[in-house]
Image 1 (cartoon, rainbow, N blue to C red):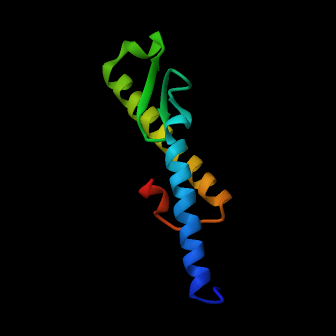
Image 2 (image 1 turned 60 degrees about the horizontal axis):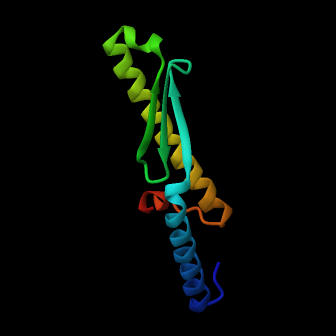
Length: 103
């Protein structure tokens, strides 16, 4: 795969630089997770920080159902962030399992 050790070192430096770029982009990345056919929306940034929660009135009728919807919407947003990070890393030609967890 690598002609010599120098190629491996160059690739490692390239990956490190790209990861730094992506880390700087994290606050600007926004996704929206939803649940209950849109009754609950959770907006999250690339750092997995919830930036907004929207709950429609219809979801307020039952506390247990609402809790489940919020839980599902957060999980949906987390999955969308993770997919976005994988896409960004993949565009750079890097596909190392667990690498997006380090961001």
